[in-house]
Structure formats: structure tokens, C-alpha cells
Image 1 (cartoon, rainbow, N blue to C red):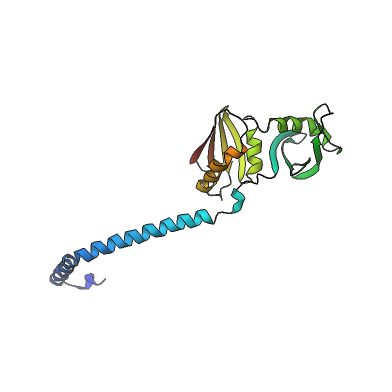
Image 2 (tube, rainbow, N blue to C red):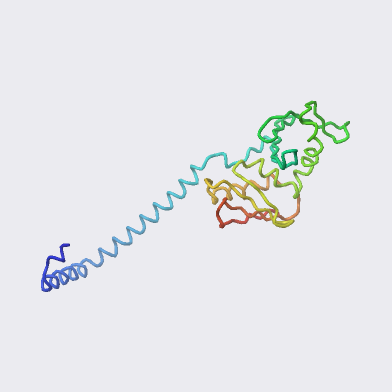
Length: 210
């Protein structure tokens, strides 16, 4: 607006004045640019570190409690079953509803037992999946139990497991924790690649195990 109200001669004189000022203060401009860039970089780095520190502690798995998430077949189709314990008995929640507890029983045919009628039809299936939980085949159930942030898992091959986490989670932070803690969950020697991604996002991070 200011230049629009000036004639060509005045505009030329004004531009010459700006150019002379810039040449005279060139060192100051360069120094100011460097300082500005440095301050911006420092700020972004501090924000990244702050973001890492402020992540909710739920990202860290509770390794003191055994918790498994299975998918079992019921009369309503494939249903999620959560089995968790911090002692001798394993509480079972099926489709979001608690249906009883089970415990190891060396005298029983399945090595497991329950006194809850609602749980008995699923005892054999749950016992089998619990026995495989610490193998590579059963690792998905153990992983989902340790990290509530995981929405779903899917085997892409015998050595590749896709892990999908909630979209409100920070993928970088989650995979950092997973990479550090996965060795505490693993009880098998075979190699396994975890393809970790957020739901509705094509970007992924590979976490190698063994």
C-alpha cells in the first residue's frame, strides 16, 4: 500500500536506500539469521524432548501382572477374551463381561480347571492359548495384554506380525518403549519382525525381535 502511493522515481530512491542499508548491515543480518535459526532449532528439540517426557506412563507395560488378550469363537462369532492374573487364579472377561476364574490343575485333563459354569465351555480353548502365549505363535496375545494401546494385530507371515496402535498414540514414543521392553516379554528364540503403525496411517516402524 505504501509503495503503491509513490511515483517511480521515489520508488527507485526508496529501493536504493533499502539496498544500501542492507549492504551496510549485512553482517548483522547474517548473524541475526544464524541466531534465529539456532533458537528455532533449540526450541523444536526441547519440545520433542518434552513430548517424550510427558507421554502417559500407560505406554510402559505392567510386567508384574500377567495379562493376555485372545480371540476365541463363541456363538456370537469371534469374541475378545481377556485373561489376567497377579496370583494363582486367572480372571476371564469375555466380550467385555466377567465370566469367572480359572486356575492350573495338574490333576485335570487340560491342566486347568474352573468352578464357573459360564466359563467351562471356553476352558479348553483358553487353556490351549495360554499354553502357547510365550511362544512366537502366541506372542500377539501377550503383546496386546501388555500394551492396551494396541488395537489389533495380524500375522503377515510366520515371522512378521503387524501391530496397529490407537491413532492418538505417538508412534515414535511407543516403538521406543516397545523396542526397550520387548525382550522382557519374549520367551522364544525365533526371529520376529513387528510392523508397528497407527490405525488409518500407512507409515510404519519395524521393531525386530531376536
